[in-house]
Length: 436
Image (cartoon, rainbow, N blue to C red; front, side, top):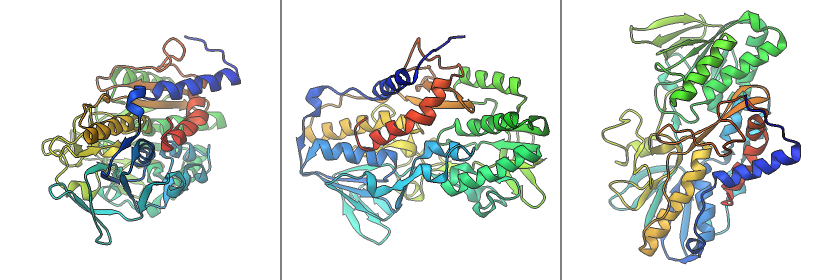
């Protein structure tokens, strides 16, 4: 096992190095300010839309940049798993959308209601029509809780039901239910949907954290913890899946393969799962619900989605290297909504934003883009309180460690935990400002 001895000062040096390692290097000549009258509309003020708006405000002179999002609150989504384990308060993940926006960007606090890629307009919820020269779709995704029969968000935190993805208040309520479970014990079912999803490591993190909290409290023997995998693997990268399987074995966590949650009966504390051999009903004392995830309705109705893949989910059809739409060259996809094989994490957005920026600048100036996205995805896989694996990979499932020879990607290290718990949020905030 690799041993890493690092003091606090050295750690923050590594953290700063990590921010640099995960940034995309752009040639100095490409960073000169560009004069343009282009009308740019960005749908979504999440991580991708906000970061891109900040970078474009710096790069462009004279552009009309409009950001469209009805959400007053910005959510630091990587922190939700910490809230759901009682390690951070709900307020840790919240800020105002307007706190992150630069001068020179117009925020319209409405949802996009329609996109016409032929006429090149976006219509807002109030009926306002926004013409564009270039469009970036970055609205995130939709948690389809209605797809789970018998489930509603007002159940979270009660009768042993958790759902950390749903937002800060629900992550906090999830901790209330999970904490009670660690104290009283019983059967815990930790689910994962069959669709593509944001941060596919989050279901595993929650499982590991609740197991470790119970172990530290001396109540682990009361818990029967079962992870309900959506297929025959525990993670999309085979070598990581095998490592998780080994850790589950060491910690007495039982994987149940090809079990997809269909319905719950909160009163009876039972759940129905679809399996290859038919529906199976399981009793539970605690269940963590992660619903199917899809592109927002405005995207699915716009004609921008793939026609021959992810047809039930509606992700935007785009080139996986440039993120440019394959049929509408004045449109780019960014973040969770992009129909690419990997990339639904904040770390992926960090790599994607400069690629979209570079593509937009090239389109405005009649030059060829320089940057491409290789599918980089990072998952600080928490395996216990104070330990994590820094898992980084690309489209081809190759491990792509930022610190080769220093941080082993498949070892449980305290420094990987600190990069998740301490260093990630400042790096994320710098990304929002367009500075990382």
